[in-house]
Every structure is written in structure tokens, then in C-alpha cells.
Length: 547
Image (cartoon, rainbow, N blue to C red; front, side, top):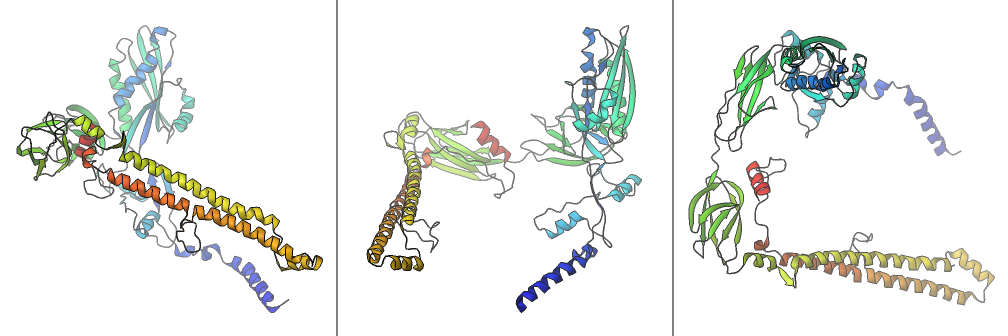
């Protein structure tokens, strides 16, 4: 065994027996790593209602099985939030390492430039405890204990028993479940209702009695009692009036759509909330409101109209031509400095006996756009339908499309002749015995008299195969993507055909460019001109909905 191999074996043994002796935490430098505790809490809750079980066999009263829970569901619809003191943790990253200061997510945010750094007011259980004790105070829009509540009905399922609510909560992803039993005796209705809280396994029971005839009308006290259990805190009410002319605005509280004014006595948990009011054509309104327990808070807001008007002047070679902005009639030419809504739109100038002229317009607020239009005599429909015809009813666009399709034909020929070239070589390979020097020497020793003729025959097979392969390759040519030698283009019939077809497609496309034959108008672009900016809603509605 040589000295080199001995060194290799020694190195292998050193690695095999020494490396495992390092502790895992030393090998991965765990003592140097640290991370503070981080907890992700629940962000929403669901309450599910099921049909109630009927304790009567009277078929005429079976409608109450779904009717009573429907009344409860309607009463819970305006309960936008619930207050949960003890939040459920969804993901927990436990603290580790010496003196941890930042959480794992904060470290990721700090090390990655593209990550958006999110400020989380509540990061762990200690922050939540401070919030409970009152040492840390947050407004309602940032307090994670205010959870949006979604009300869901499962009235097509059979009435569940109280023994199945735990399984149903897991299966339907319900945080609360409402079930019940309805008994009827002598036109008197008794409803025993159960509110199940899945995270605690807690069951709250309610009993409601009323007459059968007024069962729906007398359910409100029961609904209020259930809502009080769900709230977790005292509640107040919100009312709003429409103070803007025309269509009422949209009102949001903490990002949740509440409705359009006027509305009265929408119930909310006491606390501070963020109010957002929006109406098209007005500046959005934002403020913070405080809802106090048992009191009614009237929403106060003011909307300022956006000065969104531009000026337009239109002159034409034919007087009294009609001018339209989109579908809105503006008047007859000449038009001088008339007010129009700012934004992107389509201008049409029309007069009987002349071809309509179209222009795209990007009207900017406070600026004037001027146009000089030359109208041509003729019929608008015939003019635009036949203007691009080149041969019979075929247009430049048609020829450009057909030329583009023809590139596929030439490319298929390119592939075919390349394969044929390779097959010509492969077909001759089994007939050629001159593979190496040993084969030539062996044949010479066994048949010295026929050696010269054999060499000539073998060379003729090779020459014919190579000539045939070159012939196919000359027809095909070589594209740069397949030329591994120098990535250059080698001309051939098919390669030239591809080039001519692409050139023809581009030429026909350019020849067919004609602004008069386009669908004149602007597709709304981001208002800031960059990717990710919001689309201007006014222009978007004009272009996509009105035309």
C-alpha cells in the first residue's frame, strides 16, 4: 500500500472518529444563538348555529326548528366584535439562549431588506398580562382582544345533541356553538338554549318562554342575553346620519364595513375605534371615536369634494360637429375651455356625412386639453370596417398572424432535417468496421489481399453518410441555441424561412399600425406610474363599465 493511500485512510478515520465527539450544540453553535419568546394569538372567531330539536310532533310547528335559531342569527349579525380576555395562542416560539432581546421574526425582518417590518404591540404572554392588568393600554383597533366575529348557520344539518358539540366545534372550526330544544304546551313555547365555548369547554344555558304566536317578536331579550355573554364587556351604540348630498358614503369601523347612513343603534363593545368614511369623488375622512357603555354615539364626519375638473377645447374643419366625451354629449364645435371631469377618457367628434374622429384624452385637473380635428367625408361604419383591408377582406393584421404561423412550419422543417441528418450518420454506423487501429490490423492480417478494397469500401460508406448528413444539415441550418461550438447562426433553408417569416410578420404588423383603427381610449394605469400603485377608480369605471 502506497504512502498516499495510507494518508487517505488516516484522514478518513480521523473524520469518522473525531467529528462525532463534538457536542451538537457546539457543532451548530447553539450557545451563541438566542431568541425571545414570541406568540401569535388568534385573530378572529366564528359562532355556529344549528337547528333546534323539537319536542313536539305537531307538523304545523316544525318551522320553529329553523325559525327560532334564524331569529337569534339575525340578532347576532350586528355583533361585529367580541372581547376575549384570554386569547388562544396559535403559534408559540419559546425563549432560548443567553439574554434574548429580539424574537425570531424580528431577526428575519432585520436581516432581510425586502421584508416589511411589522410592529406588533403584543408579542408574548407577558405583554398580554400587562394589557390585562392595565399597565399597558392600547386603543381598540390595536388591542388583539377585540376579535371580529363571523356568524355562520348550518340549518341543513340535523339538530345536534349536547354530547356532539365538542366534535362539531372541531369539525366545523367553530369557537362558539348555539343549539337548543323547543317544547310547546298549550300554545306556550319554552326554549332551552345552550351556548358552547369550544376553547374552554364551557357551557352556558338559557331559558326563554313566550307564546307560540309571538315567538319571533319576543326573542329579543334572549338575543340580548346571549350577546352580553359573547361581548365580555359592556357595550354602547352607534348611530349615523347622511350628511352628504346624493349617494350616502360607506362607513367603516376598524376596517369593517358597517353600512351606509342613516342607521341607528349598531351595538359595539366599549372602547376607542378608528372611523373611516369614503365616497367616490370626496376626500376620505378618518377619525378616532370612543364608544361608552350604555350610551349612544352619533358619528360625526365631514367630506370635502375633490376639485377634479379639467378644461377642453375642440376645433374642427367642419363647423357644428357634435363632440362626445365617452357617451356624454358636450356640444358642437367650436368648443372653448369647457369644464370636464379629470381622468382618462375617449373623445368622439361626429357629423352626419362625415367619418367620426376619435381621440384618446388624458385630462389633468386644472389643465386644458386642445384638439384640432379634420373630418373626412364618408360613412363611419364602412370606413372603419374596411380601412385596413389589403386583399379582399384580409388585413395587415391577418397577414401578420399568418406569417407568424408560418414560422412554426419552417421550425418543424428545421427539426425534421436535423433529425434526418443525425439518422443518416446513425444508419451507416453498423456498416462501418473501421472503428479503431486494432480492427484495421486484424483485418489486414486475416485478408492482406483484400485490405485495400476493404478500406476503399469502408471509406465510401462513411463519405456517403457524411454527404447525406451535410445535405440535410444545409437544408436545415443551425440556430444559435443549438450551435454549441460558437453560438453563431448558420444559414440554411429552414433557418432562412424562419427569419423571413418573422420579418414579414413584423413588417405587416408595422404596416397595420393605424391610430384611427384602434379602439380609441385609455386603459387606466396606476396613478403613481409604478408597479403596485392603486388603479384610479374613476378612470377604471369609466373605461371598463361605461364603454
